[in-house]
Image (cartoon, rainbow over all chains, first blue to last red; front, side, top):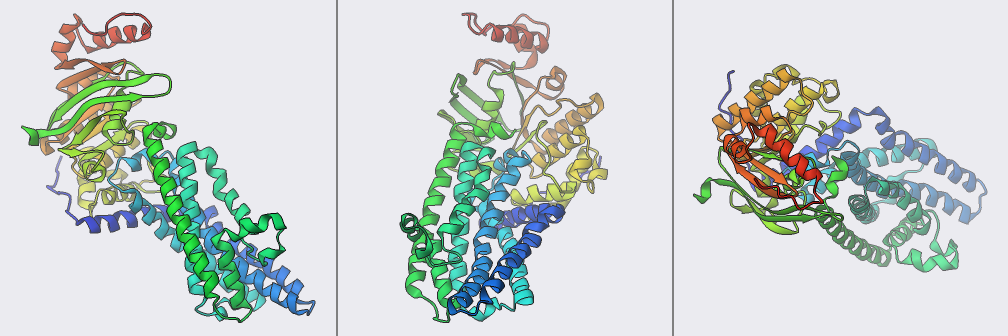
Length: 278
Length: 254
């Protein structure tokens, strides 16, 4: 047997964190690239969504009335921006779920990776999925319905940032539930989005909701982000008041979900739930 | 000498809903020492290992790795430990080298390739570097798992059932590789096994657990003779019988 005298090459603490985050992102990239059906998440399904809502927008727009013309813009802009939350949330949640499905959680938990580094890695990979998925929608909306998302201008930047934070917050909450309750809680990874979608007024002002639900809708940062989006679609510029409420709300949501995840991780270690995945 | 201690577990207690899994375990392992944690099913071996690895939090007691308290410095302590278990799968959809590179980088090694080559060579599986995890036999996966666990030259290597369900030739290769690793790198080894030939060949010290408590600790011969048995298998069977009679007042001690 001939062994070299290789020694682990020392890296700085910051360098190690960056290395670990990239390693996690790359690990999930392998899963995506080598599971062709998962590519549908960032190609076919976003395209189907843009075709569905674009066709609806085109139909509504043919009535010629001003509200109908507005609604068609709301539908297309709404579905494209909705995918910012959807893709960021699903990419992060399924990052952890992938480790549970493949019984890889123990392998990971014994390594020096810190929780924040793991989340950073799956968030990095999630950003790649987000860019591809939303990119497909932007191109689809332009190609099939002549809807130029970029024409909404730089006012989109803060809205996208807020929706990204909301997507991450929901995923942290879902991860906490999965750690606490096991993979039975994974249905929430998808289900929670179907609750948020109508309540956030993605495609319509929230006064279209039943009166009972309107206070709930107003408590969600996404509602204010999509109200700000409609202001852009209506060529009224950025609605800074709505953006401020949405930004504060999204960071409160992020802080609460981080607290929840840390608490659930503590419970996970305390009760020895790792044995569910070995 | 404190610097020589790689693992210091003091007063570990863990209660699950129905029972106390670990009941006041004290365990100190020194650099280069090869220790086997033995006991019947349900004795508390895996829970003890999981607490030493920082994956399960003890209800009482503390764990220090190379002087680093696990509760306060989990990441730094984990850099000094490697873990593999015969029952854990490889990460899916990755080739062996990609898989080992992933874990090398998680341990902070910027360029793990030379260490990967060393590890594969040590266990005589260099030809598997390009294989997909799904193409490997269970024995090959176990060997890859041990290469992964030892890639970063840990001070303490923790193995749970490393030779479970392996063919005798592969099990022998695992034992030879582990001995080489410990002797060459000064790595301390803490392993569980139900195969007493593993224990006799690889370990110089055995620690028997029963009902979550350490009931014997010493070299294999002295532990066997303390129980009046000819070998470790006899001690194991004796404790297993006592374990089944756990409702009675019988003592697990010699």
